Amino acid sequence: MPLDKISYKDYSILKLSFKLWSKLNKRRKYQLFSYLILLLISSFAEVISIASVIPFLSVLALPEKIFNIPSVNAIALSFNIYSPENIRLPITIIFGIIVISTGIIRILNLWVSFRIAASVGSDISSAIFKNIIYKPYLDYSNSGDSIAILNVEINRVINGVIIPQLFFLSSSIICIFLFATLLIINYQATIISALLVILFYFLSINLFKNTLRNNSKLQVKYNQKVIRIIQESLGFIREIILNEKYLFFIKDFDRNNYKLNLINSKSLFIKTYPRILIEPVGIAILSLVGCIIVSRVGFNDALPFIGTLVLGAQRIIPLMQKVYEGVVTTKGAKISLILILQLLDKSPQTKKNNEQFILNKINNKSFESFVSLEIRDIYFRYPNDSKYIFNGINLKINKGDKIAIIGESGSGKSTLVDLLMGLIPPISGDIFINNYDINHCMHKDIRNWRSNLSLVSQNIFLSDSSIKENIAFGIEEENIDYPRIYKTLEISNLVKLVETKKNGIDTLVGENGISLSGGQCQRLAIARGLYKNADFLLLDEATSSLDYETENKILKNLCSSIPDITIVMITHRRTNLNFCNKILKVDDGNLIEIKK
Image (cartoon, rainbow, N blue to C red; front, side):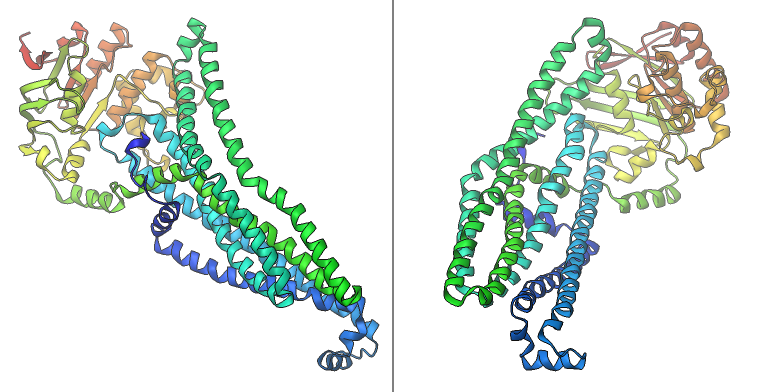
């Protein structure tokens, strides 16, 4: 997806973040509210754990000082504790319980953070996948970009925006509570330390903001390039082996992959380095503060306060680092976030449309069976082309017709098939199915028409699954009609192949049918087209990889087994014309009928 066409490019990262979180459904918003309550509980637990350090260290250093406090003395006597030294163990146990409880709450907080991030990420992935798969046919230009968005950019948003911002939220709230606690203990040291830490992180963010912005753009760019190289190299694997072009693709992959990893390493350094730098500085500041306190009140009295400040700093510095990471990581994922928001803003066909489609199939009788198809005065050209592929063509197809479409390569034969399926709309003219103009019908009506036609394309795609699953395309295994499977195998001349396989129709075909020959793949595609049991069958060079004898047998089986089926066949083989009652030639934008 070109970056110059992306909306939101002038939005601040804060505005983009609000836009993303505003798209949460009600359930996720309720979960986020519950998460905020957990954060408050976690913050109170952190405060109690920090505050409990003072009495704990005081008991260790000066037990009599704590024992002489009236409320403590009264509680101690009620438990038959009469000596100051004897309160050390109970206070230590209480302190241990508080610290362990705080740790458990911290772990729960972490677990909930990741669960919410996973749920939100899953919602986003699902919404974007629906958006991509429901796009208009002409919008499918680059599958590599779609894969990059689904496989890389969504993960970058999850790991670079959602999780860091949840940690930013939790760390910020806990930091505020801890700072408030430390202010009560020693406001001077706390204010000075806090200002230094905040100033350091603020300067770090501003120092690298342009680098993060550029890295965000480059990461998207090189991610898409790397995925495209992988796709193309696997797609050209035969040509690569035959022509010894290994080094060309390896060098291209290494070059772009190195740049991508270099950019990732820079972003990772920017995210990580502040904590490494601030920890020794923090130790130096705490050492100075401790020295000052000891010189004023003595070691025994200073120990509880120094211990509390050290423990507080030990908790606050990682939290401040998470706050910082929440900002810089989000900035680094800005372009990915923009891509995701742009896709989320589009309105794909949703579950409601699917339910309406099912309802419409029950109520609308117009496309229950095919009667006739007529195209009138159709003009068509692709959006970026000035030349028209069709200039006012006309065609009438009746139920049971067997029509051959011939013509030179690139003349528009496959485009005509796409028009008949309603995948692409004509520039002008009308297409009537059973006397209904599908170009002026609702989307659900076009889908009703498509449910009654089947396509076997020259470009075959087979999933890495069994023979039966490839035939019963998109159908759950428990809903497969096995008698229909075997009927399609018979028509497409695949019975002998299945019988030779140990697992029969459960045999795996491999990725894109790698374990089958080209002809076997085509026959499997024909079986898939027949399984749909449609009235209207489109064969787009569907038998081009078959030998004459096999092709002839399949076409005979088809015409004899389903005599009423309507077939439109794109072919370059003259022998196929014997099965057709009408021959049409696409020539220079016109559709000419050829007499047999």
